[in-house]
Image (cartoon, rainbow, N blue to C red):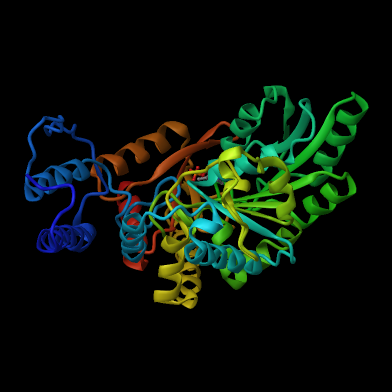
Length: 446
Ligand SMILES: *Cc1c(COP(=O)(O)O)cnc(C)c1O
């Protein structure tokens, strides 16, 4: 039976076995099916006896073998995941050190690391002095953190488009706002929120006695990667004295590229930005971020005192993240971002993101040449949507056949009532051979 405090030798043995597992998992990724629909029937029951790690790793391997291979290079569905192994290694260090990282006084060194990540992100987005943020478990929690901070009255209204991620409406509902408070602004032909229509709705709502408080623009919608006109929405928000939130959970990381920066012009005027390093920075699941223009807005919403906090001092220049969001006790997240950025260098991330933009464009151009396919919108970021010109039934058939092959995992959506197949490129493991392979498969099935 392995003691709760393993000896040095036992620890090394565990580490070696775990690292062997990791290495063979990563080595095997290029050949694994993108999707294995079989049910999992391994025995995972908890019993009183202890089992050796080797046996348990076999079970874990079998558990990971079924379902969607989100870590693999041919996962082109939803928003593809990364899983940089260097971040997982940071995770091992973090969880071993187990520091209390939401109170600076308890872990000033690790908080400095996390703060350095947040300052770097704020600088990339051109946010001014006084800006800052908090790392969250993901984009949904980041968005909730922003909506609660932005809300001023219990009956305020906020403005989204039909392509805004549902986490905004969810956040509004958790914040206690009725579903009618989420106002859906029409989109233009490129599926971007129409700022003139938004202005009209806001004026009309004010006439009806409603209290507009927030516009949510999106820097890359989940459906198609459409980028709302952020500069115009920022102007509108400023004129109307509204909080301007930008959802960059999918697309935000493209700010690291020249093309992304050009497309997101205006994002530097945001009051808050949702990011998902576990999407666009290729990190393992569990790392989102909220950046705010003025950290005092988070402090007002989340700073609470309690008698049992009285021993805790303040650290000059280091925030207590507990006062910037919903979470108190949580894993330290900074190192999982910081270590990969430092180890690979930021330029590696800029290059990889540039590659994803190129690959999506390449896929779009190749698919355009396949007779019988419709591609109404060129990719604004790294997502391509297409359908069979013959209609929904033919598109669904094509989609089902791609799925059934299990080699490429694509997902679908509905735009203006019609069925579309989406191909989204975002994994650091996805390269030209994978995208062109997917195109070939689509060609052979069309
Ligand atoms: C993924 C996504 C979210 C939600 O983020 P989670 O990390 O899944 O909670 C929000 N907005 C957009 C545009 C997304 O793509």
